[in-house]
Structures are given as C-alpha cells and as structure tokens.
Amino acid sequence: MKLGSILHGILRDRGFLKRVAVYRAYAVWEEIVGAEVARHVRPLRLERGVLTLVADSGVWAQETSFARPAILDALRRAGVPVRDLHFRQGTLPLPEELPDLPVHAQRPAPPPGEALDLIRDPEIRQRFGMLLQHACKEEVSHAAPHRR
Image (cartoon, rainbow, N blue to C red; front, side, top):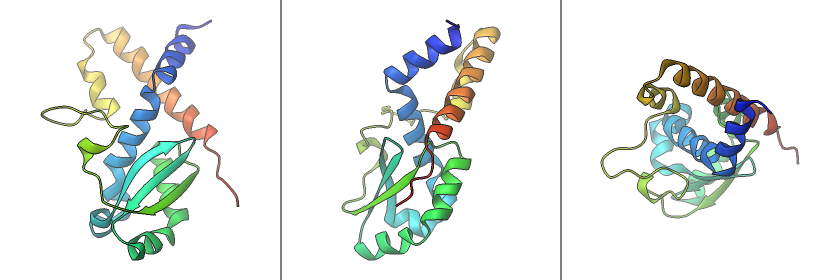
C-alpha cells in the first residue's frame, strides 16, 4: 500500500477532507453568489455530497435555488465535492458557529494551499500538497451530479 493511500485514508477517516470541503465552500461562497446573496444565504454543512444552505428568508432560499446549476458548477470548479444543494430557512450562522469549520480563537484556518507553507520540510510539503490535490479531485469525482 502506498503512503499516499494511507494518508488519504487517515485524512478521510478523521473528517479532515470533509472539513476542508466545507471550509472551501464557505471561503468561496461570496465570490460565487455575490455579496448581496452571501449576506442572506450561507453554507452550513456538507454531508454525502449535499451542501446545506441556510437562508434568512424563504424568498432568498427560493431565489438562490433558481441558480442551483450555476452554483453547483462553480462550487465543483472550486474543488468542493458537492452533488446537490439543500436550502432551508433559518438564522444565518457565524463562521465560528459552523460545526464543520475549524475554529480558531484569533483567525480562521488558512486555505489548504496556504497551510502547506507551514510545513518546513520541502519534500513533505510537496508530497502533502500532492496528496491534498489528489484527495480533493477524488472527492469531486465521487460527487457526481444528483438527478431527480
């Protein structure tokens, strides 16, 4: 068994890949939907390829749902392993209230590419970077579009 396979399994089993995917969705959300929509609709959790979005009103949930295909496409291009979106109305969570996001006292965790800069050994940094790229691509390929 290759080291990459072992590391991928460990990252998957510990939930790291899922947390990275939710963090990535949250990080690119405003860029994908625009500032106005992002003020009213936010990602909440990602389970089995379904990204749950919370809207502060039914109107915002419905309006955003009309853009489902474009949002899914943009999220996938950003490396988020999503196959469908689920909309619900509720109170918008703050980043520190999201269960799947890493919580830090002073600032949010950096995106995976920037986090690699924290690894000092160049060989380990390169291999871990390749592993993350492969893992994210694999997660996206497993999140095939859901047809109803």
